[in-house]
Image 1 (cartoon, rainbow, N blue to C red):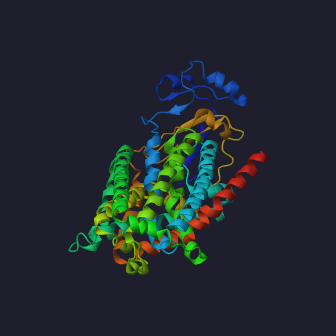
Image 2: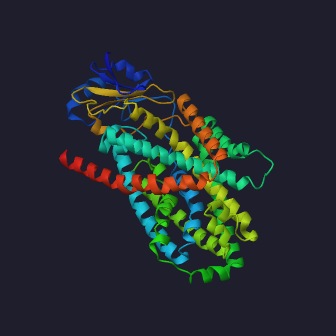
Image 3: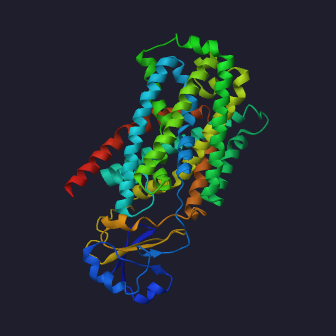
Length: 478
């Protein structure tokens, strides 16, 4: 058997098969085979299927099963959406009041869900066309808009993800610093990122999922306790706050980007498509369920915190979100701290899981190593895609790449061990986040400003509709 090996990138190769595989390979236990539906390959298929197999595809087994977790995806959405942006929201909504801010938050949510569904549809389309199990927002932008603009999108997107990581680390450190005034700031900021890094590097995804779900339960318990305490101790303030409403543009406009950031989870949408299920319908269902819970939490959180802060104009004027939260009525302080911690902890897990791949894609794209693979399999008997990184299974199929939906997506990352390079990237990212959060004041609010106003509005306000339009145009011309 002869192969023509064509490099796609540093770690991936396209193997063009020009001579049929002997039939004895089929009984060796190494590969299983049946036909594809391509008429051009009918003769080859008949020659290779003298000993038919019950399987529906050629599959190089490596003992790895394809894990899908619908409720794990929902939990990851809830944890990621309810994050640092939510904690910074009351510092902005206090200027307009509860009623105007509620209207703005709701319409922001409608926009966010629509945009995320577009990204999910594009993700599934790309996975089916290219025969892969996971894509990134950068790869979607590159596929639709080209390498040059894709590189620019990658830089902005990577900056957004990293700023959110830094905001989570800084926010968690700000919560625990007053509780341990004698402990070094660097140590306080490093404890939880160290825990998250250990989970990601040394434990399977199921363990990460369990930790994330426990934090989600803590978050739900905290917000429930906060609502109960808030209604009992600050009922009068909550009711009277509805009288104070400002519809000025200067009061409403700053809410929009942070509300979009608070309710959005575009950052992890491609990863959600990977684990939610095998169809775009399942991904949409997870997005709607997972996205509705944060909306209810945000509306409750905004209403209760504004009522608990009351007339504390000093904290409101400071403009520091964490200071505003810690200035609430002492009877509700524990619930606020518990909710704030669990919200940022779940977000940190979500960003830490998805960011390394995004960063690697960005570096590869900028360095010029990412190549378009439009010629894969055209005019050939078939082709195989093999990843040189550990933990990946290879894949061989016959027919054009557009028939990949017939064989499904079997090549996947081994969730039980990260690849060595991803381990290094994960630890470096978390380490730099800790250093920035520890030695620069007001990191939380500055990171939110950048993520919400600049990166988030550009990436998720403009790019998804443009990508969807280009994708539909390409489908019509095929």
